[in-house]
Length: 393
Image (tube, rainbow, N blue to C red; front, side, top):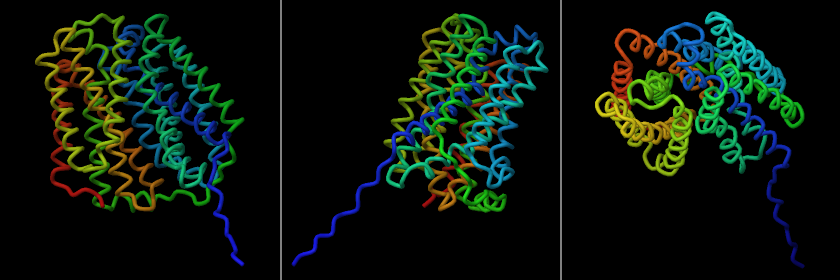
């Protein structure tokens, strides 16, 4: 008599879990859009609040610095508190920050609201990045991660350009108010869909320090630091760059940022197909190409046609940065991806803040061209660091 042993059923994921992950992705989309939206509306906000273009760049620097601290420290501070409660609380904080932004009577109040934005995005991103592992079986972690990380990509492709166009057609205050309303909807979705997520093991500072002691991880966060600093030293001022250097009408800035985002999405998918072959060589090429685009802008980007062409090339190159950096970080992390992600997120936000600050100094002291030259030089440093290093195993 033959006994037949049936195979175990294939794992499945309830539709409610997928919807919860999508809600988290929309939350990430909202957070990243709020953080980066001043880049598209910099000229209008600066003029309305009577500050220079360089000083207006502090609207990006402040949340970047705060998020740099919040990303590693908030997961440590909350211990075993249910992550569902914390994510909802951070979104509520973002709603309050957007309300304050939309009614800010002066630049000081604006910076206070941007401080709150930094707490929100730093904490939300650090926690959301690790949700995929807890929400679905191992076979579906890749798809779930793509959804949660996709919120940040969508913010660049759609959020910032659409927010910029809303600000141009109405006012920058309306754009931030709309994002606050979207955050309210996300809160409702998370309350309805997200299950309880108590921490099995709290994140400890020793785990972060342990990751940083790895040579391959130090190279990885250095890649993040240099590439993101180079990008935001210049992209923070993309609105005046297009209008003042390339001679493009302010009305076209929003649509052109949408084109930049679409190019970035193409670069992201292209990188996903190529980076696994040799992550070291790929990142060296990314650093060189980003430096070339930034350096060419002062030389040939002074017309609408060449300015738009360089902007699209910029989007293609920078779109490949997140997936290539994350590939290096995950290879170097071993079995502590949550600590590694928190560490890299902290450095990422520090680089945003520093890039915007350095770019602002160069814009005020020299010109936008000066910021482009600095950004190009920093991008070259990325390739030099990686060239002298070995890829993580």
